[in-house]
Every structure is written in structure tokens, then in C-alpha cells.
Length: 270
Length: 331
Image 1 (spheres, helix red, strand yellow):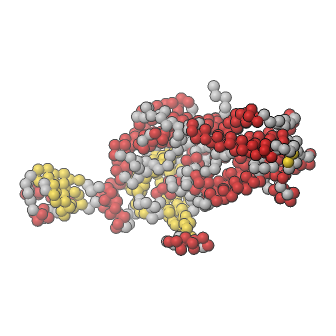
Image 2 (cartoon, chains in turn purple, cyan):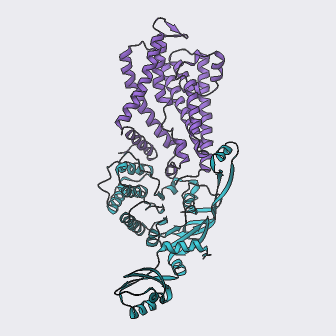
Image 3 (cartoon, helix red, strand yellow):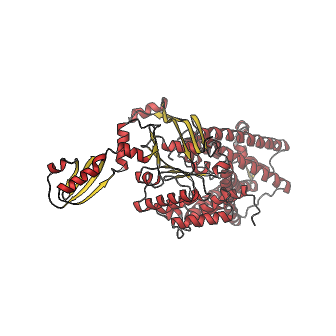
């Protein structure tokens, strides 16, 4: 007996299909994971070398920084990974026409694909993380249950914000074939401002202040700071407010851009 | 009140197109200044289609056929005019409407490329909320009609073009659509597969009393399937009526194909009509339609003929003449 409402079972089926699709090519899967593993391994090695003859750097202890690298690896899989990189091109080339014709909510359709992709990423990241832990045997900071709870909610909010930003950038395809440039610029900015390559608090204070009014630090950095216990209660409140505000803003913009885009959609190449 | 399933009333759809000058300098200039002009893809087109009809959309590339289908399926927002399909405004994209029609595109597919076709069928079952019993019944019927039981579990990318097209049709028809838009469904297929698909479309139409609009570059598709045709030229409807009436009006000649038993001269043949082919023993003559039977009789009496065949000119040639003469066919 199917206990799932029919309206949801379509997205569940899409989720399952996305997993199946992601497991078709074994070599691609292996190389993809190897790339992720090497990226984390490299970061761990660099920071381990920096901490060889000093107990702290940039106000981080060794265990804080190693924990940071592990958390970045997980959050990158959860928040920053996306199956919608080709959305703008798919829109411009008319490849989303079939989806627009079906009795489904397209936002839910994309969400199902995103969740499937992110969970696949997290699944493999956890296995790789365990392997790296066995290799480096680092001291990992483990927060309280309450912090864990808030961390998970913040990670989910970060994921939602990133999803809406992806939809906004993907919507460029409704108007222009030049989708690669803006996307490339976005990912460049994201690499430097989401805390993916280094903690943002090693930057000058003025730069930090500016960054904190953009959505980017809320796509990994603040979650990690929370996990490591480096946020004051004021900063936590600011974190909550910012995450909620950016969720609403990006949601509204994504809705508006998508509605406007579909109205002018030309279904090219059909 | 009209009993039409599809109502199109003064439909227009215009696009803004960027016009680039040729050459490198044109590309450089386009970086700072771009000129756009408006293209009238569909301009003031009206028609109605009743339930159960199969209508052929005929037109040259860029005539506006596919644009019309895109508007009818709710993909494009019309610039002007009204469109109703099954009583719905397609652009509203209401699930109740989307569950009753399908658009099949010969050049775009909905099958998941790296997975077997059956996976897409199961996904569509969930998306269209098809009850299990109905799904199994329809799937079995379509699989039997199209003879694809042995390829359902094969990766789509490993299938031939014809096999893929059959699976595309199944994916599009699982929810038993009342209205079917077929955009070049036989493109790229060999003649055997074209016939299989035409037979299938005819059977589907008869069995489900579905309303079908078909666009195709293969006039054979239109001739075999559609009693009624709509001809579109540069966004304007120039004909809407029985395909046979175009043939009657535009096919001024019939073709007499002769196999001669002895040699004859060109001069002997020219008395009976325009000689199109003279490669003895094979001869082809064009004769006025009204006199075709009489002339054939005269040839049989006066010339050494082994075999004679009277044919209509190919529909492609008739349609070509329609576009070349640009006559007003409006009915």
C-alpha cells in the first residue's frame, strides 16, 4: 500500500531516478569522488603543515582548523553542491519544455533533483570523511546537542538560499544565451566569500563587515563558526535574522524572475 | 456553442530577433550596439478543430507551425488573440489540462538518456497520477501495438532512433491524452518505421477518439493520416480544408507512366501531353486531369504500350506549387 500522497510520490520517484542516474557511470562516479577527496586532503595537509610548529594561527587552534576543513567538506556537499548548473543552458535551449508541460510544480521538481544530488554528495562525503579521520586522527570539536540542532537548521536554510540563488542565475537563460559568464563569476565570488577556501575572519574587519551583509557567508561560513562555538549571542541573533531575511529575499526574487521568465519563454530548438 | 476541442481566434505571436551584420566587424559592432527587429511568427491565425479530427499542419521551415503548437500546449504566451484547448487557456498550465494532452517532438525527447525507458514510464505514471491498473493496461496495449516489449529495460542511449521514437510515444500517451500534438514525429526515420508510426497514430486516433494535430515534412504522413490540412505560410493561414481539395485545385495534371513494347519517337508522344521522362522503354507524360482517361485510351490504341499507369502527382509537388504561386487558397 502506498502511504505517500500522490502529489508527493511524483517527486519521490524523481528523487529515486536521480539517484539511479547518478550511479550509472562507475568511472565518472569514482573520479568525481576522488576529486572531492583530494580537495579535502589537500586542505588538511596544508593546514597540518602550518600547525606543525605552532599551536594557533589566525586565531584558530589546530583542532578548530581541522574541524573547519571537515565541516567545509560536508557543507560543500550539502549547501554548495547543485544538480542545476546547466539550468540556464537548458532553459535557453528549450530543454525544460517537457517539464513545463507536465502536471507538476517545477520548483518541487528542481528541489527533488537538488535534494537527491545533495544527499548523494553527503553520503559519499561522510564515507570519505571517515577515511580521512582514520588517516589524520585529528581532534574534532564536538558541540552540544543544542548547537547541533541550530547548526542543522542553519545548514538547511543555507541550502535553501543557495537553491534560490541557483534558480535566479539559471533564469538568465530565459533572456540570454550568455549564461556561462555570470555563473562563472558567481562561483568565483562564492569560493572566496562563503568560507570555502579559508575562514572569513582572517580577512580585514572592514571586508568582513561588507561580506556579512551579502548572502555568501551564510552559505557555509556562519554555520561552521556556530559549530565551532565562535559566535557570541549577538552574532547568533544576527545569524538567525540574516539567514531568514536572505531566505525570504532570494525566494521572492526567484519566484518573480521565474514567473517573468516563463512568460517570455521562447522554447527554442523545439 | 461550438463543439470544437481546439479554438484559435486571431492568434498572433511575435518575437524580437537580434539582427547581426555579417563578418568580424559586425561582431565587434554588436558588442556596443544591437539592432532588433520583430518577427511575426504567427500572424492573425484562426481555426477550430473538433474532437476526433486529425489535422495536418503544412508549411515551410519557419512558417509558424511549431510556434502555433507551442502556444496550444501552453509553452508560449500569445502576443494577441485567444486560444482554448479542451475549454482551458493553455497558458494557465492547469494540471487538469496538462493531464489531458501531450506534445511529442521528434527532435526533443523526454526519456532519461542513461536509464531504461521503463523508468521514464514509471516516472510519468507518478507525475500524471495514473492509477496502477490503468497504467498497466495502457502500457501493455501501447507496448503491444508498437512491439517494444524486448527493449523496455534497455538503456535509452543504446536504442535506435526508431525504437526511441516508439518509446517517446509511449511516454507521451500513458495518460491517454485526449489531444495530441505531434511535431515531426517521423523525422529521421526510415520508410518502414515511418509506416509503423503512421499506422500506430491512426489506430490510436480510432481507438481513443483523440484529437490530433500533426506537423511533418513528410507529406506521406499528412496524406495518409489527415483528411483536413491547414497550410501556413510566413505566419499566415493560407488554406484550411480537405487535403483532397488542394489536390483537385492544384494538381492540374495527372501523370501517365508508360512502358513501351517497341521504340517510339519523342514527336509521337508530344501529341498526347508534356513529356517529362523519355528513357525507353519507360516514358512519363503529364496530361490535363480531366482528359487523363481519354488520353490514356488514345495512347493504348495508337502506340505500342506494354503497361500504363495513371497517377496523381506527388503531394510534395502540389504543395510546392501552392507556395510558389502564392495563390489565395483561403476557404
